[in-house]
Image 1: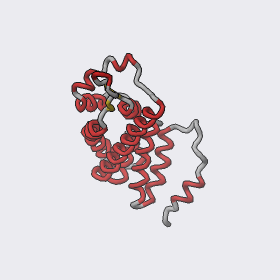
Image 2: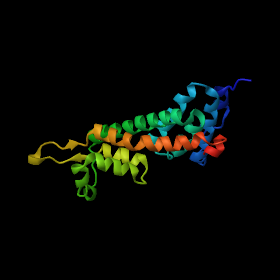
Image 3: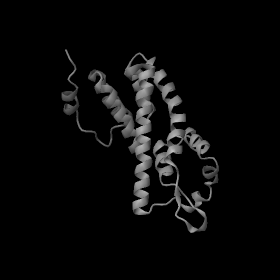
Image 4: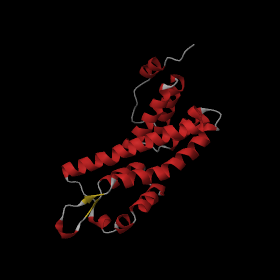
Length: 190
């Protein structure tokens, strides 16, 4: 009997605020199990959404991707989702900051010398810090550097954000996908 994922999804009760993020992830990934190749897209979009919204960590999704697609496929899905979600968060924050004049508080600006002197190393350090990805993505997206002689402030370079994020996210995605690929069940992976 073929799994009818669309009927299953629409027959589920709508997500309530009381439902835990982990249960939400479990339900969505469980529904994705029977989707065949479409599951790659669904799980990637879940990682993107988790990254943009910041409602839950991406680690459970990376474990689930490893369980569903194996270490290589899970790493590809997780990394793609994290990079797309992170990039959209970064660029969205930049757009909103430019449009509405959002700024980083002065107390933080005073401590941004490391970011200015060694931007790639600082992004790598931030990515390894136990901070929510959303805080990092949105925070770096609104970061500007003052320039001499009153010229307009310069934005933190997107390319530095992207490559620094990929440098850290790829190995973490592999580790979690590898762990998920060894699980006996989806529940054990999560």
